[in-house]
Amino acid sequence: MSFVCPLPPVKVMVRPEFLYDFDGKDRDLVEGIWVSVKSIRGEALRFETYLPQYGALYDKLPVSAFMHDTDEEFDANSMLELDELQIWDALSYHVTVVEKPLLKGLRAEFFGKDKRLHQGEFMFTLDCANPDPRIPDFTFSETVDEHKSYNVLRLNNGQFALQPNNRCRFYDPAFNPQEMRFPDFKVATKKYRVEQHAKWRLGDTNNFTYEGNK
Image 1 (cartoon, helix red, strand yellow):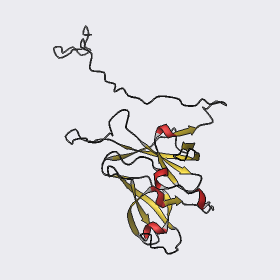
Image 2 (tube, rainbow, N blue to C red; image 1 turned 180 degrees about the vertical axis):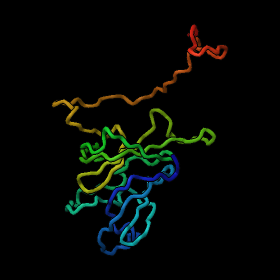
Image 3 (tube, one colour; image 1 turned 30 degrees about the vertical axis):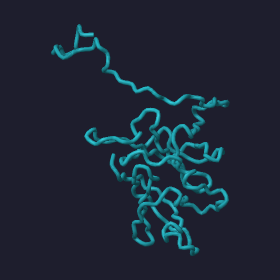
Image 4 (cartoon, rainbow, N blue to C red; image 1 turned 60 degrees about the vertical axis):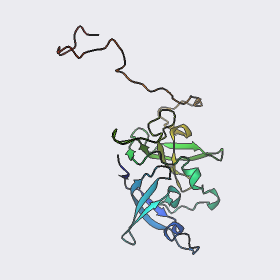
């Protein structure tokens, strides 16, 4: 876990206005491959992208700068803004990639700020935490009821999204019933520990199995 984290290589198309600082000129999408992601607390996650046609690395672009590597035509009116694709800024300066084999490639959807469901496919998750107890943690990255992870979704509208668990649903036809329940759960608020029981003291024994100590 670090400020910069390598990413699984994902082919993307970069919107040219982001590469030319929104100078207003019409240009074609540029082929790219994700290289890494950066996490700056209080800002949108930023992606470093290799541009093979130029042999160049372009850094610090938000998720809204990217489209799929595809020949499909997408409706420009269905494009979502950055604050809809990623609804929470980075919680920490330290980010890591979490591969989830059970979910990879599954059909997914998220409930957007526009009160609509947006369909796509699950890819992987980005998660934040404080990596070193010697570094003061001034964020909510380890606060139970405030922590957010960022599920990377490949959306049907041609974009990518970074959405927390409580905004997403994942569909596996091998496990889901015909009529699925709506997740009406409450936010977790408790922190669980296992070494807080007063009767569990083992500092004065050298028995291999702690036999007789409860």
